[in-house]
Length: 149
Ligand code: RB5
Image 1 (tube, rainbow, N blue to C red):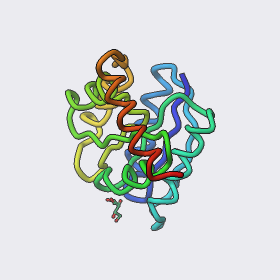
Image 2 (image 1 turned 90 degrees about the vertical axis):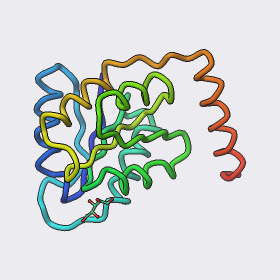
Image 3 (image 1 turned 30 degrees about the vertical axis):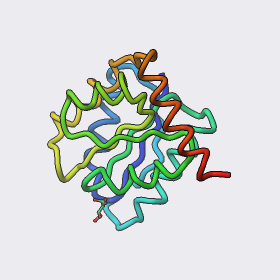
Image 4 (image 1 turned 120 degrees about the vertical axis):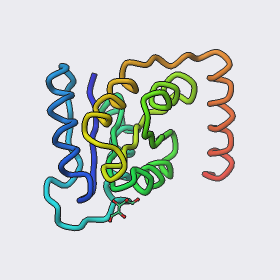
């Protein structure tokens, strides 16, 4: 499985920790984020990862900024993206199982590195459940289509 990862300056250190963790677990990882702590604009990174994911360049995305919220909001503007910012492991597996989230957002200023890695594992090990959940995902897609003509 190939993971597309992106981060702004607030998420650089955590990005490297998560990348190393993913590579140890055997995931292929492509890095779209900044590798320094020089200020960058999180919407550009969220957009890059979201567009690459929708282009089929990877299977799932992980986005990291200070709160995890801004970069997730930006990614969600790309049609087909369901990015969910999570600060706990329960939400992380449920957003994959019920909401079929294709991007996980994490706040580097909100959660520590060990919890962040547990959140990543919980998200990646979860399986989308389909069924009634797919019906609701389809409803979300219909809303998106209404505003993206
Ligand atoms: C950058 O200072 C910060 O605003 C950004 O990382 C993020 O938290 C935005 O949502």
